[in-house]
Every structure is written in structure tokens, then in C-alpha cells.
Amino acid sequence: MESSVKNKIIIALDVDALERARELVGLLKSDVGMFKIGKQLFTRYGPQAIDMVHTLGGEVFLDLKFHDIPNTVAKAAEAAMMHGVFMFNIHALGGLEMMKQAAAAVQAKAEALKQRKPLVLAVTVLTSLSSADLSALGINAAVPEQVVRLACLAKTAGLDGVVASPHEIEMIKKECGQNFLVVTPGVRPRTSKADDQKRVLTPGEAIRKGADYLVVGRPVTGAPDPLKAVQDIIKEIEEQATDRR
Image 1 (spheres, one colour):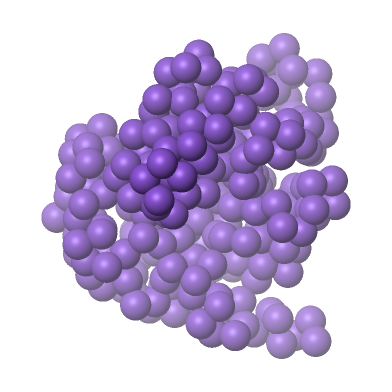
Image 2 (cartoon, rainbow, N blue to C red):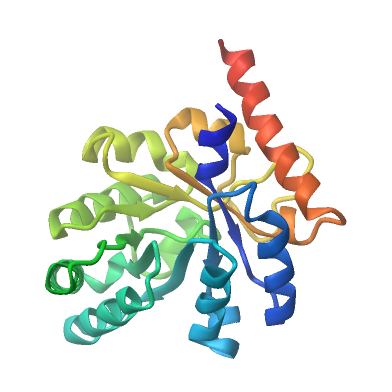
């Protein structure tokens, strides 16, 4: 089980310096499946950050949440693919047509270049938001209802899966099928604080609910010993799986 658990863990490289990101990748690449490059690192270093992870033998989840008119997002999706990322995301609130054009653009480019198509995910509702936050935005649906609605829209558009909190995994799988991927931020080990996340579960709970990938940031990157923190997460997942049996 350990190998499969490792492959499910994505470490968020939400750090200020490329050298710090390089240290983390070098330290953790044998114990996790992927590294997330988000707005913080990419805005400062651009594709150099992606190249760094690839050079060290890691895979990349490019977390830029593209959200714009359909043509612009389709072109951005093609550009993401050209960097060889394993997966990237767009924002479901950009609408059905935006998601459809992004999915079609990536598929066509992959076929033309005879390359592996990256996984394309839709962000549903950020894990920092509650139903009250949605209401303030003029969205009257509760968070679970809104997440599932957006997940179904993403599936209709031809995307591979969604980014959603662990609390919505089972509902998404029920409506969209077991093969529809769910990548879950908002994962916190039992000994960690929630920080600015509102909808969180432990890694073991998220895996039991059907998460395909877990995104973990500060509990690992902010730990005194990041490698031990990752190994403790793997151990926690395995222990919870054993307890359930």
C-alpha cells in the first residue's frame, strides 16, 4: 500500500525562493508523487520553476486556476501542455464553454504532437470558502450542492476531474463516476492546525472517501523536518486504513 499512498501525495511548493523549492523537491521526490507549482512560485520564477522540478525527476501539477474568456483559456491550456506538466487546472466558474474549449485544445495539441495529454481539472469551490461566503457572492446554493453542480459541468465539458475539498469527494464520485478524478486540498494531519482552510479532513479520511490525490503544503513545507512530516502522513494513512479494516 505504501507505494500507492506515496503516488497520491502532492506537495505544494508555496514558497518564496526557487532554491527553497529545489531543496524540498530534492528531499521529497522519492517519497511523494508530485509537486504543485502555484501562483506564488510561478509568478516569481515562471517556467523556470517547472523546469527545476522536471530536472530533479519530479512531476508537476500546475495550479494557476485559469479563468478568462474561452479562447484565452484554451491558449493558456495549450501553453501549459507544452511545459510537460502532469496536470493543471482551470476554474469551473469560467463556464461550460470555457472548459470545453480548454479540453478540446489540449486533446488536439496532444494528438498533433503525439504527446501524453496532461490531466485537466476544474476548481470547484475553494476550501477557504463556506456557504456563508458563497451567499455573500450571490450564490445561494450550499457548498456541497455548488461543488457537485460544478463537477458535473466539468465532466460534461470533457475534463478529467476536479479540485474539491475532501468533504465533497463521495458526492462527486456518486454523480460523476469513480473514474472522475478528485484532487483534494484542505488536508491536514491530525497534529496540524487548519490555517485558513475551512473544510478539512485528515489524509486518511480523505483517502477513505475516495480522493485520488492529496495536496499538502504547510504541514510539510513548514515542518522542521519535511521528510519526516511526509513519512508521518503516509504512516497515518496506513494506520487509519488498518483501523477501518
